[in-house]
Amino acid sequence: MKNYFVTLIMACALTTFLFMIRQKSQAQTASPSDNTGTAADPAAAKANQESSATFVTEIPPGYRDWKLISVAREEGKLDDIRAILGNDIAIKAYREGTRPFPEGTIIARLAWSFLSSKDNNEIFGSTQSFVAGPPKNGVQFMVKDSKKYAATAGWGYGQFDDGKFAGESKLKTCVPCHTAFKEHDFVFSHYAP
Figure (tube, one colour):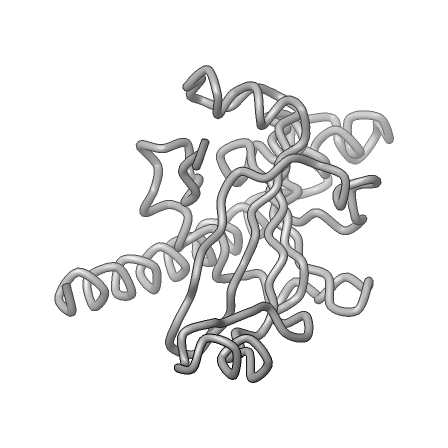
């Protein structure tokens, strides 16, 4: 198991490195005189910019009313308990086993600190009850839009800390880690009916 995680971390790091090199190479090869028409055509420039988007910078409305996909416990440096929610499109795709996920799928991850419940444990007579504590590690989203997020295999990634976009530097590790799950359309979570 330890070797699996070391391999996964190395794969993520290598993918990040290659992704950054690709982005830099694309930026260097683009010029005002290229044949894409982006310099002379503002609509083409906007379309090009949208197709190279990576990050979700606005919180999808109503996400707290979405249905539950699964619950997970993360240890290590994350050390949280989390709920994975999905909009109606995501829930339908999970229930029907549709892969790749359809356009408009949005998956949300909410996380809280993982605490032992003193009150519950007193009643049970042993330390056996754990509950969600204060929010932790922001709220994260994956949005499926193959045109807007073409540069990242059709998925946009976002994290919001206290309701504010966490910034691109915090999200640079999203794509490389999710690339390890390419055969699952880049999604970690499995549906827990």
